[in-house]
Length: 68
Image (cartoon, rainbow, N blue to C red):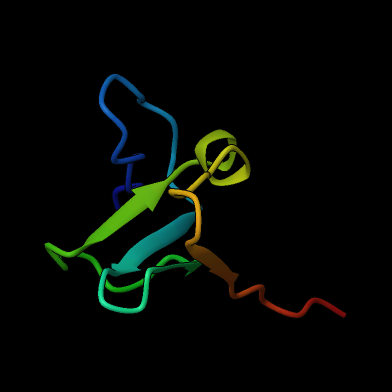
């Protein structure tokens, strides 16, 4: 299986998370890699995941996987 790459322009790192936006609720949701091929989702590498910011007044929802 081929690794998915970060969606950010010029970035060639492997994606570890998927970002989606809900413009009507002014919310960004980011979590584990979602299904490939969704045109409304953006894959992010660790660096871009950690640096994610949204417009003032927006909410970021981070869905983390539980590890034991």
